[in-house]
Length: 362
Image (cartoon, rainbow, N blue to C red; front, side, top):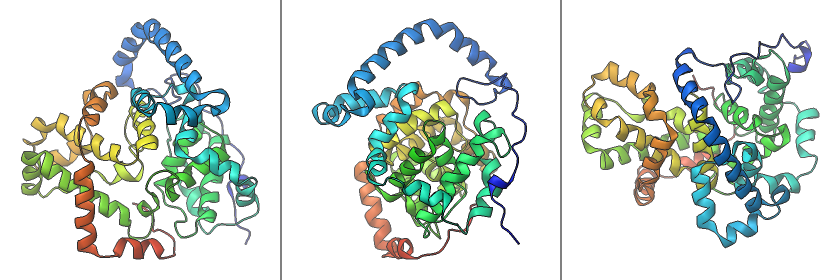
């Protein structure tokens, strides 16, 4: 029997474009008040944004030609500007520059096309099954078997062939989907490679290997951070038998792109691509710190619900991110990593070297 691919299907109708937010997502009813607030500020914001874009264009140069030189000369300026947020119109290009993916693309001409067109993957049916679950409220991915879903399929299929040890895991769809909103298929593929293989920062592939070895390590480290930096909350979690696997796994697996407000996820990704995974720990701690006084009063069931549904005011990037930036975690992360490795020996490396497809996340 001939195997079906996504190209065997006809595209469905495109949803009506009305009631979309500025990022292309269907608007939620409860956002009307915040939309009005944004509208009232729009003149000021537009003028400020134009100035920011001019600064960024000067810093980047044509097509990114001045970027490396500027980063070497003024790394602190770059870090500060990235933490304030990359202008949305330049986000795709800057993400490629800071992740190292642009260099990978240039060094591997024709490779992506080969993977998409001429190779087959054992994960193809799994990818097709999950396509509609990735950003289902975004106009780009809503059309059944339309351009967005086809691009997402191609990127995920190509990666599952490129790295057969990792193959395909459902959580990867949110990474690829986010990238596709800001760049071409080929660019998104190489950025996915840069992240999972560690072109600039520590490789992410351990988040998706069998047994999720890196997820286990990160949750152990996060648990230690909560107990050290928020001891009262840590004690409450112990009493209520709450551990980070109950609420924080998706934070690491999708880098907050799964269920967090998109405007906040983008700001986190700006920093994540430049500074690495420490920002995920910092944002997680900042959320718990912001909601601390409410969380310590809640019993188990309400606590679980609260940890999976943070209030809207806690999700304001201009409040949450400065709080996250002020939290120091590097030393504690290194100590807890060593502690984890001493407890688990070489388990992480052994699992990273084991071939086989990652079982699907539930």
